[in-house]
Image (cartoon, rainbow, N blue to C red; front, top):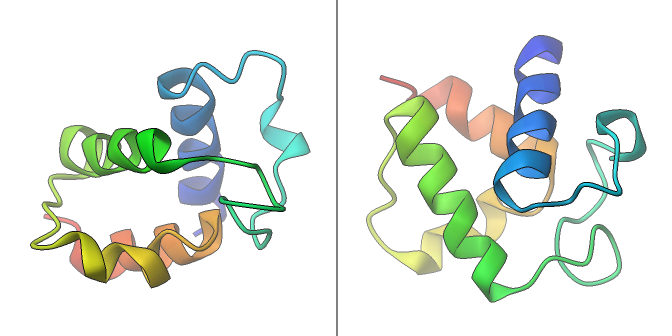
Length: 84
């Protein structure tokens, strides 16, 4: 799980062009959107692409994404349960 969280942080930084942030700067339990990392709806689309590209996971509808995309930890838990 820890390795997956680290890997996810690296994918987020690379795919969302967050060059000013290091993986250790991202709190795995902090919100990704709003007050936490401050991501927006465009970033959410990029996270969907990360799930498909690296983990073979396709979200069926965007409504289910909200609780999954809460934090790096919730993303990692979802990947662990749904990875192909």
